[in-house]
Image 1 (tube, helix red, strand yellow):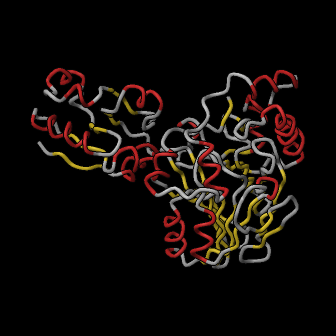
Image 2 (cartoon, rainbow, N blue to C red):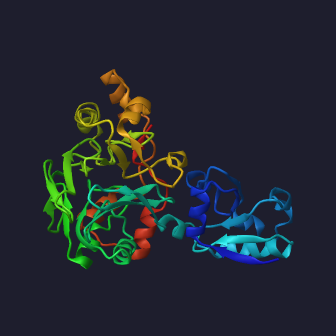
Image 3 (cartoon, rainbow, N blue to C red):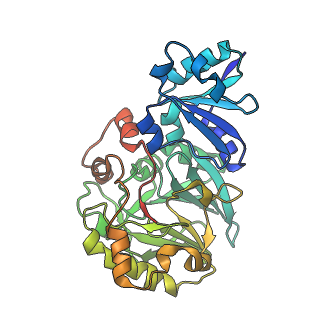
Length: 375
């Protein structure tokens, strides 16, 4: 039987289209338990590849004959080996091209909607990491918000749609992934914006992003309004775009809210988090479409693969927005938190410009799931 490579784009379509897939994950049990390829109709079997060195006969009854089978490992080599062994036993299987490292980096662009005066808004969904970034396009100009380190994806996409990148923003100093903001700005000549309250230790020049900033992209009617919304970090800033979209950064997600502890200041910032969510956001139109910087679970994806929901719906359904007792809220966001992101201190220092890890080190620092949320 044949063995073929399945790339991350193909898997992304299966996730979004809710297709069936059986995944044989041959990484160590701990790595699989911590982080795997998520899909609503995916089934899994995990066994470390070194247990299969003498053959795959013992697991043949675990592999379905009526489903597409994908073998997954960290970097590709082990999954290719196991796939070939399964093929020798008569199964038609695929292996993940580039392994989980490549899956972690893949970005799926999804058009969220049109803007009033002819522009568009795109969301880049990083399915393997839970990161969400954005490109606002108007009259041949583009702004990028919360870019990942895969800078070429944004630069090339802008070229494809004949847009010039003029502004790059980070809603806050990220701790779970390395920002591509500065790299994109350097490559395109764009202005790089960062909230100054998050930038006290940065070692590079930036434009100060503060509440009340209006940055025009293309047509003068397409404004990006900056809304100061601390809590996840002290400088966290949201954006209202075209009076229709609310880019909430890591303050508010679809099924959860932001955690305040990644700079070691949970007790100090929990009050800011509550004020941003329960006061500042309550003053906004409930018709705004919330576009967060992360998602936590695969069920947050819409039918088209986007992650978006009306603010009013979140006020009604998101548990983190409906805790009346302030002490209960404080307890929820400061106690029993999920593990902190992998290498988050090094990631913060990289985003400050203090250290410059090589490409392979950056990959290793980012491996693992999204851990910016509290449910």
